[in-house]
Length: 478
Image (cartoon, rainbow, N blue to C red):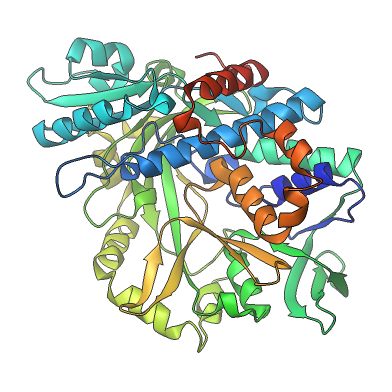
């Protein structure tokens, strides 16, 4: 998120003095690191939680369309960076990978068919295929269909224009461009410990050099907090009214991973299914092809876990130290109204590798334990917000918090995260620099994101044009 915002602002005005403070020794070692997330270019092609079934039985695809449009914005921006020569080698960070939804049983198959029918009406999901035929499914996902009983009811949808994205590599490519070819200053091993308002409307940050244990104060007209789980305590330190009542609920995760190429060759897709009862949305089981540093692997999960750390390389005191008088009611309310989630997390944490393998065998009937290793994923801090009725409410989305003067902004939350980074950062710029964005920066904005301000769902011609452009620049092969 921060690398994207810095790149956007530098493009709009190369004279701006911009500094990035990164607490680790390299960009993208936390949530954005390749193995710390699923690497799904979230287009809502396969994620069933974005298309809920309504009480009357209809399927609502508004959220799915919104997320699909946001990913198209990201692709346009990355295509612009490639066209300008700011970054190279798109295959290092993005590759074509079909996205599939897979369900089991009559009831879920009916739901998936209704979902397919509804989504097929939208230009954003044009080309989606649906099948309940075992022979067709065997063509699509031979590994999953091996040793299946022919009487088992299964249904799947498939979108060939799905992608696998290494967001860590992409972020480092942007970081290298900022470091070498721009005026943006990058300070590694530097951690912002506190943000305070000044009387003149500026912000004073206390920054610690983690190598030399040196502290300094930095003043800024505008601050963006893109610190993953650590955004919450920094936002709280700013004392802006808009931050009141926010709390954080950290959730960790684990994957089962195989590098056995015989298995990998039989599964060339990302396959998502339904979440189990009481599971959070980011725990939807999926079996994915991953392409990381040119190497293919399969990933299954995620299995949820719990840690009081807000970052993988954080402190076990992160959660207790985030509790204060302003968010105590929100935290208690969210916990009290999410007891089933707490129970679910405890069960997940207590699982052995053998129990995790049993879940994998719902996808791959003859999965062997020796082929799979357990890998720890990244930490996610879900947002807890004030709620007049419940006291506090647990949110699973991504949220931009901005003060009324538009001089400080922060990104909170997890999913759909990195896929929608460009849209999220344009939202920050819209809220904090509205006159410039719709004035002197407008022409540059349309050069970077040609579809900006238009709804692709309502414009088939523009959708086709934009997708053809990004497919060529990103060297996609669907």
